[in-house]
Length: 305
Ligand SMILES: [Zn+2]
Ligand SMILES: [Zn+2]
Image (cartoon, rainbow, N blue to C red; front, side, top):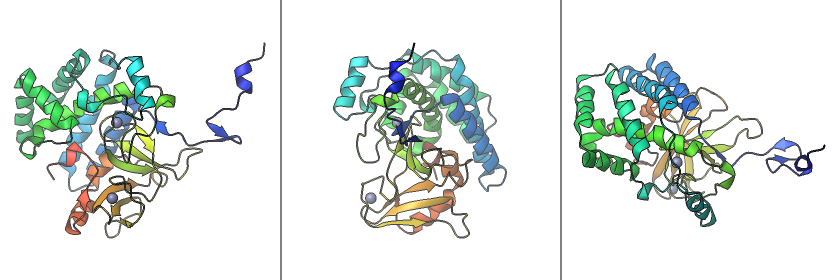
């Protein structure tokens, strides 16, 4: 018997050529495994070696935790469908309430983080997170989800942010990518959050296309090139890199709003990772700061720098 559905045009193909998808949902184990390897590679040659090595261990713990965790609970299907109709993200960060799965994720990861070798200050900070009561922990979660981590307690928040990255990537992975729609300038279509950076990818059928990478849930979503991801302007866009750069890591600057978000040319170097290489290219932030551009990409691992 022939399959009738196979005679219908496939919306992901145009004239036999695959069409660039609007979103690519995360595969949590693959993402954190890849990130751990990238942090380790960068640590081998960077001046930030101890910190990058520490973050490699954090990403390793994130990847290792995923298979043992209970399944995360998505919002009701009706809420997800309604969000799509109104161009809203299905996971509402503002209304997020920590649930049993997040608490289990937190407990699992904090235990794993305890086994990582780290400097004294990072050890003390982890001890504070361990001994934090539920309201204190929930306050940290709320600060991270509203992108307002207090400077004085960044070290504590780094551990909780790593936990939330795992939880939200697992939630995002369970969504139906076909139901997701654009929700605003530079906003993740899954959780509504800002990007850490953007990637020019080399995927088959999407070569040279740009994807912004969510700082929280690791969803990648399509954005046109030469556009500010902070204000949406297509005017006054420039590109800067450090002296002697390889042309694979640049800052996309915007003269309209005075901000920048990094762009990684992953089609030229597939190893580039939006989070690891963002930390690894701190020199570019120092350069841009001197040029009075404001950093718009969000990365909890860079707040203290
Ligand atoms: Zn997101
Ligand atoms: Zn702008």
